[in-house]
Amino acid sequence: MGKCKYCGGSTGFFNNKEICKTCKNKFLLNAQLSSDNINRLTNDINKGFKEIDSYLSRLKIILEQYRTLNNAQEALPDLIKTNLNYQEMKANTEKFLLEFNENKISLIMAMKTEKGKARNIYKYLDSIDEAIQEYGEFKDILMKIKCHLTNIIQQYNFVRPNDQNKLKINLDSNRKLDDIEERFIEELSSQIKKHIKKNVELTIEVRRKYLLNFKLNGYQIGRIELISSHPQMQIIKKDTVEWINDITLQSAIDLIPEWIAYAKKIV
Ligand SMILES: [Zn+2]
Image (cartoon, rainbow, N blue to C red):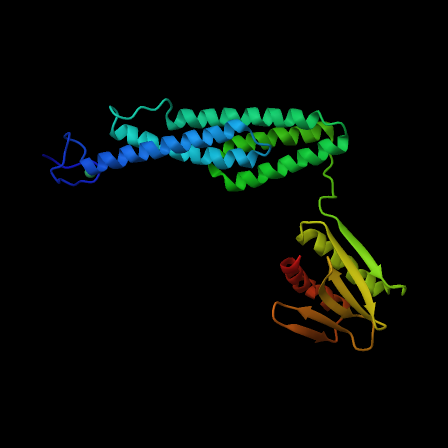
């Protein structure tokens, strides 16, 4: 009789002097579940993926499962055998990520056009930046990969393409727009491109003499009358439609984020 070194209990259900039956069963079950998860995810990984995130999300779980497995093994060294410990598995994982990186870069550099290479290397770099934020346990190796990519970009002078999200603008009127209207539209367009990360179509309809109606992918996002004697701007929210009077170009530009917030919800 004694106390279990894991739970501190002394229930009498000891089958050896250090660990109670409840803890033993818990470790055995954990080891079984972890092994199953590791096998399932390893099979998954062996099928192959295009993007690094698909690997990282699985490798992260595999590493966590190795930790659980190692803990169980430490508790029951005679019953649970593992081929690798956590640190060895982490080293393997890093080697695997470096190999993925080499392959990915070879594929990109084998592309036919410089434009294709540039687009894909920046896309890959962006995915590495996101991964650095998301996967702290792989940060060191991801920083190494990022450094490698940055060197290649400098060496080959790859320029980041700016056509990642396109904005098509249709002006549905014969009236020539005033300079003030043009400046408002310019600012609106740049904010749409910045905040709405997909290809969208902005249609500008002239209603009455000075009232402009804006639609994004066919959905109205707001109206504005900038150059009339009663300048006003419409702000649409989820449940309300509001008109702001005596609007100036600057106050209209300051209100563009309200349009963007609504546009984000509908496109
Ligand atoms: Zn116990």
